[in-house]
Image 1 (cartoon, helix red, strand yellow):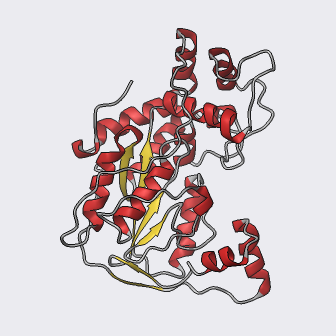
Image 2: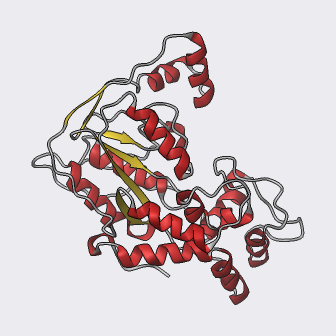
Image 3: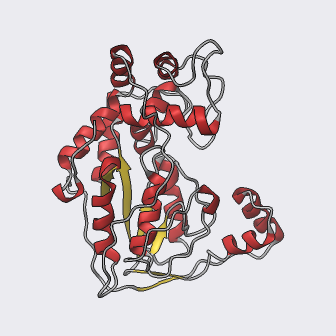
Length: 321
């Protein structure tokens, strides 16, 4: 099935409950996993494992691929599907991970989680395991996956800048300016890669440079991404029900999701959350770097082109260069 978008218009219905174990060991594991020391915050996060409401057992699951606008999409999902349609979109970031409640739908995303065990940027095999576990506790009979894709070259520029400026997980040699063509070229080739982004399970440069394919195809270990993995990623997007948007076209995706969860009489607000973007604005890339970007992220580039050609027109926009 090549049609990604599935419209769901049924009335909201009660979906079931997720119980929380009372024993100290289980609570300690949750607290460690969430990295929370504050008692009030811990109470907030454990309270999420309470009865939730959904549309005839539909779970909306956010497949969060890093540097594809995922945090913005998480806010959009909460705004559109959790009873806030028509209000200004909130701007929850990582510090609010799993702290927001969702009254009107079963939603699993960065800001609002079905239980506090959610891991962002997980590969699809781990996502499938999580959903199987959620089904043991919630009346889930259908899953709608929501994600965003981005040209591989753009995603790589954004991740490179993020790792240098914010995460401090990579740096070029001292004689190379951090934000420069030479720096990006070294990054793409895996040179001087002594650390890696702990939130991304990408144990090879090939996977890091093609993480959209590596994630959707669940490429294991340090294996290099291949054309076969690209076909597996496409098959993942063909299987089940997906809403696939694009990082450059988030307003269009926002409107589509809003149509699924809008309350009667609600007025659509096109405002998107204002979040920091790491991509350098003033730096221009030379032909050597642009060629390297296209080669090193070629499988992600091909996945994006395939998804774009298969997408409904109402999820598209004029792509920026």
